[in-house]
Length: 291
Length: 148
Image (cartoon, rainbow over all chains, first blue to last red; front, side, top):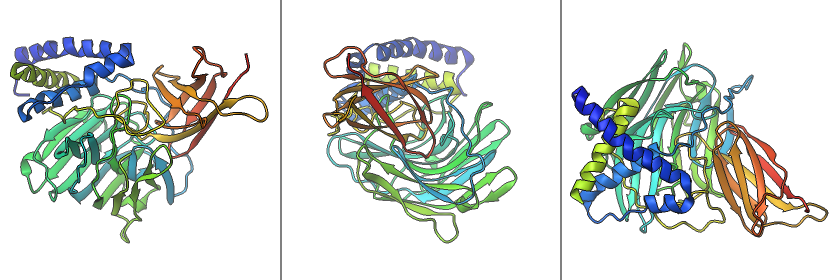
């Protein structure tokens, strides 16, 4: 960090006081939370503030299922299983001791309709399938008042919420995302070859992460209590997907893999993954509905 | 307004710096939109639309389908609220149940206690049901409102 220690400490103190207040406010009542989160955004220059507030809100969620049962699939044979989720679509490999996951994609073009805020995240990661953490990075598109904003980001949940890095990601950008683990150290890398300012490498530590899954996912991100409507990304194609479990490296189909369809409350498909390509290292997720 | 925005930016920079020594931190807009048409609402009622969720960003959430109905035969569907409480954390997710008596939500893998109460009653009328949500599996829950 470039900040001198004194300034860094000041930032922490400056942030913690209102953040604690927000945490308390969100814990009281539903109406209080609604009041706290609905904010007008009068101009583009005010967006940074709104963005920051969202990040604070996410940090203040405080509803993390920290002690969930970790269920690695014992004795599960290799092969494809089709499953349904309310927020994920794509593929997940399950097993133990995953240490690397990677994929490339062309950033989708998003159609934003109406004024409703909609989100879609495209990422690779380790964990989160059945465990209580997820180490992930990728790109994110937000439809806000009919306009698309696209970002690069990483997250080590539950240590933190989404950390946005690049804000010049655009449809058509060539993206490669990788999460690599060495012991308890995780290196999160996103490369935007088209707009290089969006690229980053971040190293984080997690001693308690289970490393029991690796994923390639299009996600409808969650807010404090609901899943955001899924932005219309038409399709997202992950390619050159690779994964390492233990000492074995391969592609998606090299390990026990689940094909995950995103559905809504009426079991209608929101995002549908296609079959793996012949090399087992790529697939396309097709958007079908927002919510 | 500009000062407020600047203050919020500083806040998030500092919070993320404290939390995870993040290199950068800014985020997307927070405009909240009216709820989409759905028979379900979540505890906080932030009006984001979509399914109720356990509020755990990033983790996979698995489908939980259920029914809320009277005891006896034939059973009749009930409207009201079904509450899922995370046994480990105490985190609560509420689902509003319509007149069909059917509900659906997404929960991360874990163990929950579910109870139901009808629209016109303050207290739960169903016995607590332990619900185990497993990754990649559909979970079905049946809550029966016992006659008082």
